[in-house]
Amino acid sequence: MLIEAKSDDFAALLRGEAPAPHRLCDSPLAPPEVLAMLDQLAARIGGTFRPSAWMIVEEGEIVGLISPTQALDASDRSLRIGYGVAPTRWGKGIATRAVADLAAWARDDDRVLALTAETSVDNPASQTVLARNGFQAVGEREDAEDGLLICWRLQV
Image (cartoon, rainbow, N blue to C red):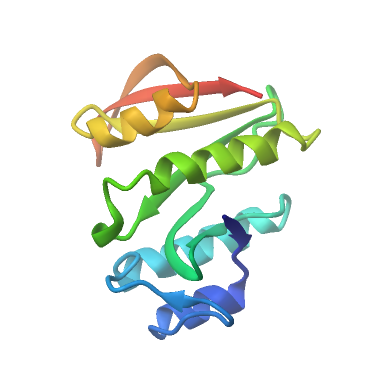
């Protein structure tokens, strides 16, 4: 289940606390610097587009985060997304379900015509998540920090 993450939720996560009424899972969602960056990103995107982040919640536990990674592209109404799941929850289908939930949300939001994502060529798990949700690989690009990335797109 996806629940909108607001600035107070990120503040709690940065303190190592779970936003009520949820619990934190048994491993960190992300390092503090990544949580802080996601909070800033959500605040920046939230100025023009909401929701700007969601917590991934399963059985009352916050097990991951999913969000746009940039503002809505006005030229083609696409929304680039990123996601992460706590390491102790990897391999349990959580990211696949979260991306499916986000795609369902996007289909009901008239502002969004497509979701896009990028994965490292060295991240087959994330590639599988996107492929299982109907995303198509539409190209590659070289990133100075992350290396070769596969570009994905899902028309909603």
